[in-house]
Amino acid sequence: SAIQDEEPNDLNTFISKHKHLKIIGFNGLKSESLYDKYFIRKPNIQYIVLPSSSPANASTSFEQKCKAWSQLITNK
Image 1 (cartoon, rainbow, N blue to C red):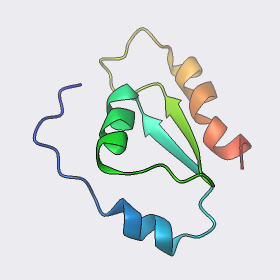
Image 2 (cartoon, rainbow, N blue to C red; image 1 turned 180 degrees about the vertical axis):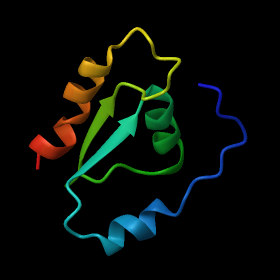
Image 3 (tube, helix red, strand yellow; image 1 turned 135 degrees about the horizontal axis):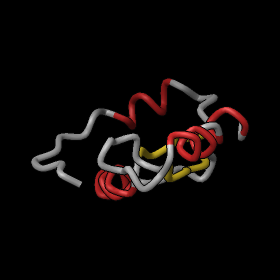
């Protein structure tokens, strides 16, 4: 949430070069909102909002974060 004056990476080129990309995981709600600000979601890609890995996100236990982030592997 403390991100300011962001500059997006060239994700369109990255996505176009990785044709087998199936899932994009967002590290919290802020990263999702920034993605949506600069990019259009592709219909063939699944998008998952994950709990932030930031230490400021202490309300979510490490175990809960690991379980949520494992979706990136199990949702192939």
